Length: 588
Ligand code: OXD
Ligand code: MN
Image 1 (cartoon, protein in one colour):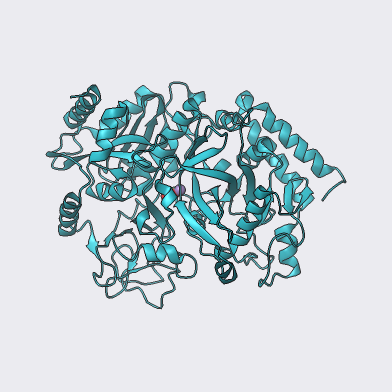
Image 2: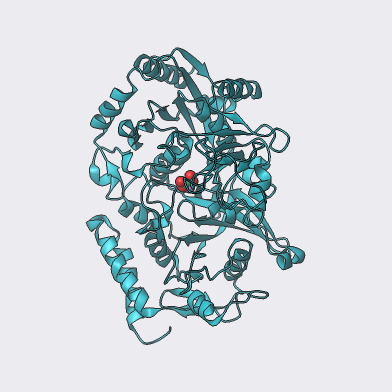
């Protein structure tokens, strides 16, 4: 046996000694294995079978009502030096963290099965992919990891060949919020998660491995692990530009990744191809361009608001072979959520009680679907290409009711890094805590960067070097509101108008006006045909409010200063350059 498999076996033995499971099952990822697990979960009530004629091979899981989202306050990055985790992370010394969480793991699998899940993040034959092994006592986690990763025998073979893997240990424990931790040990390539069955806390390949641990690995190895969707925009000439876009959780990444062009664009021959909806791993290739893969194999999407209007591709994807979590049910056991807009009505809410809108919504606001990417009609064949796709543009975006215009382009890479670093957004239901509060969420990585943001920004800046053919950087805001509190931009399919301008900029033909905050579309350069935007909308979507931006850049100064001397000085210098443009009287 290889030394890697020896090490893996030893680790499984050690975990079994600590957690004392009744059985150990090595997952091979086969259909037969999945069928047996699902049957067992149906029998014990973990899964409810949905209407087999409308939603074949699909299931509903109802989680513990206090286990419905990521728990950022219980998520730790445990590096030997606190400064390496940075003010952006909760930190605990590794020895203390191991001791605390191991005390919870002690005997926690008694009477349960311990599952060993070898998995690969990214196409199994891609040099950009990385492997891990998750140990869990949750068959729900196994079923979801099978959809979200390349799991089983092929991953184990790759692990044996490569000689390295990320270790993830998970137990649902008692699902007691008082006995819950999500711990990361980046130097040890190790994750320990106890007390939650929620996706972001329990499917360890996703946020824990593919973002927190991978961002750390990426810095060491010269690449980037980002909270970004990846899509391809094919123009009527048949050229495809790939775009990576970072938005905070529950801000429409899945919708943008699966966008269906508005009718006029469709007729003209525009197409959007989906590569990924949440995570992007990218690195400079030999030609100096960034090449990106989606490390995931499925979508763990937010259900509420998904409809035939907002995201027909997602709706088509979840018609079969889907695991739903915390959605409502119709009387004939079809899944239902707020905003599905399909003419049906809910009978049972996400807690399994008769639906009463005065008590709670039918679906939890952070209810989810887990489905294979292969089921998505717009899934790109290039998503499986081991070389990855070349990235033309990087887009940052937040949920900003005021100030931030629809789209602008950064002047250059350094300015673009500042734009990403100073991103803000209103909080959503994807994490526990207040919703709708504006917070800084640099590159949408606030909950996911496995090391000090100051070092992370320096790492971003380091890609600007001789021979680099860097993507252009943009910022978008689909969420600008008018004085009446209504959204000013139609969003969804119409966001393609903005993507068209973005790829026009990359190709060098779309016109822009220079302003202190960056390049905005020149009048007429962004196609608004068929939309009726009034004067207020035009002004707010395409204007720069100098006073408002001055205040924003003052606030950003304070934010950057919180990181102390580790913060790369180029960012503060760039901030001052933008600020002085704002106080000047030149361009608007
Ligand atoms: C997610 C999240 O689940 O960002 O993707 O919370
Ligand atoms: Mn996400």
